[in-house]
Each structure stands twice: as structure tokens, then as C-alpha cells.
Length: 349
DNA sequence: AATCTTGTCAACCGCTAAAAA
DNA sequence: TTTTTTAGCGGTTGACAAGAT
Image (cartoon, rainbow, N blue to C red; front, side):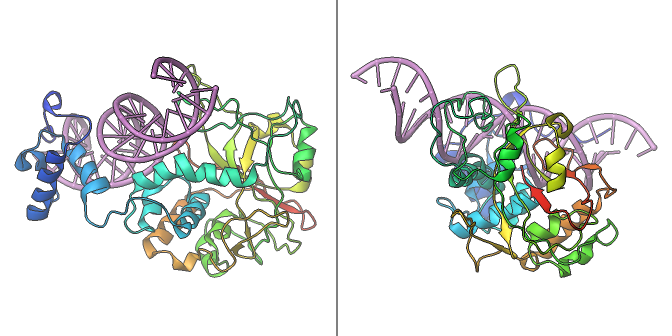
């Protein structure tokens, strides 16, 4: 037989914590610690709460050195960089931000940061009926009681050439062209993945270049970051918002059709140019020139996590790789570059 | 002023891997 | 070895606040 049940589910309090409960929990843990056993703790501390609830309350709110309030630009940058590289692994991201909890970062990303980035790339609404049949409202947030139907999701001028191309395919695409130089001589397999940490300084680049990508110095790559626009709508009207990205060459884009992609896209973008978050010629930017997240700056355990995640994947040519089986995680749609003459284009949806 | 819409965030839910019996 | 629970994680909910109409 297994363990005894943790608590009498019918007899535990739920909902917001009172100040009295908070002080009971805080005092108990400060005096006796958790003892590595959250299940036994509430009874010992005189709380009618589930151990799980106590743990969450302590970790997210009561424990010392928790930072509340505004996130700094530096924190924004780290969150965005890591999210771009590893997706919604909030605990890993939180490990890089002392005093911040995974819950906090998750909430911040979902309610503010995502929109903040979006806002940087969305200009004023176009004239009435312009591209009426093409543009869609933003797909997030997923919460069913929100209604974004009337908000514009239209890029600033000039539209990227890619966007114009894709109009021909009647796709709902919002993206921007950005020069993203490829690192020199990236030629990866799952076996030598770890080698790249010495070749490429930015984790953004380090983790995104698929196997077989060759050197490219024309600085004409595209990185787009955002949400899936096809937005499978459930019965209650909510959307599943999947952040994902694509990598492919421009010649592939010119031939691509919506059905072949499997989904259409709406996106916003962050980019990394010359190993730095940098300004785009038309004026929008994220981060600053001397303010980049280096792979080598990361904790060893984070590096290992990133590497092991990547190593699990199969890098055969022209395969679609799911980075994680969990919902709302990054979806890798990796297409091998065809020739060295192709312009390499990286999309980040 | 009343009502409706949208934003925020603490807390809960459900899943998975690991641990315990 | 099998069964059951726990710990930890990420996704989602819902109460409340703030803003818009």
C-alpha cells in the first residue's frame, strides 16, 4: 500500500489567506522550518489548510526576500530572453531572478510583458477596411471572459516584405523582417549540441539554430515572435494561445501555403543582432546594445537544463520537433536550409 | 451614477516524476 | 514490483479593482 492521505480534503479551508493564517504559518516556519514535510506542517502549525496550499503561500508570498512590485528593465530583458529560448518554464526563469517567484513572473508575462512587447510593434490602426479580410484580433489572453475583438493588431509601416508576400496566400500574418546573423559555422547534431555553448554567446542564438545551418553573413534573417493566430476556439470562446517559432529560408517562405504550415500566424518580435538585442532600422527595439544575456552568465544548472532539453530532440532533416509535450510550450518547426545561397529566415511565432 | 468591460494576481487545478509503503 | 501519495511545476480561474461607456 502507499502512503496515508495528506489531509482530509473536505475539512480544509480554501480561498484567500487571512492575516492570522499568514502569521501562524510564518511564525511556525521561522521557528521550526518546514521539516521537508509540507503535509504534516499545517496540523503542527494549527492551520486548517492543505499542505499544498501552505507550501504555495509560503513560497509565493511569505518567505523572506520575496520581491514584489515593478519589474526592472533588466528583469524584463532576462524574462524575454529566457522565454524566447526555453518557453514557459517559469521556475527556470525565476531561478535567474532573485526574489521573484515563478508565479509572479508567469502573471507578469501574461498580463503585462507580453502586451508591452506587442505594443512596441503595433502601430496605430490602419484606415477603415484596410486589409479587413486579412488581419485578425490578437489571440491572447486565453481567459474566456476577456474580449479583444476590437483591438487593432496591425504592424507599423512599413509592412515587411514578408508580410506582403504572405498576403498573396491569404494568410493572417504579422511579422517583421529583422537582420539576425547566424553564428559562424553552426553545424549541429544532437550529439554535439553542447559544443555550441562555446561558439555562440547568446542563448537566444545558441538554442535556436537547428542542425545543419551553415554560416551566413548577409544579416538578412528574420525572427518573429508571437502567438499562433489560427487560435483554435473552444466552445466557450476562449483561445489556445501557443507561442512557437519557425525557422526557414526565404525561398521556402515564398512557396509556402497556409495548409502546409498547419497554422497561420500573428506575431510580434524580439530580435538579436550581432549577439545583442538591438534597434531595428525602422526604429523599434528591445534591450540595449551593451545589455545582453550571455549563455555563459547562466547558472550551471540552467545551462544543463537547456542542454538536456535540446539533446532529447531529434535533429533529422525536415522534421517537426515538439520541444515539450506540455501545452502552450514552444513548438519547433525546423526546416533545414537548402543551399548556402538561400537567405536564412527565422520566425518566432 | 450605474453598468459593463478589462486588468491584475493569489490561489487552485491537474499533470508528471519521484518517493514511500 | 506495484500502488499510492507527495512535491513541484505550469495552466487556469475567479474575486476584486480600475477604467470605460
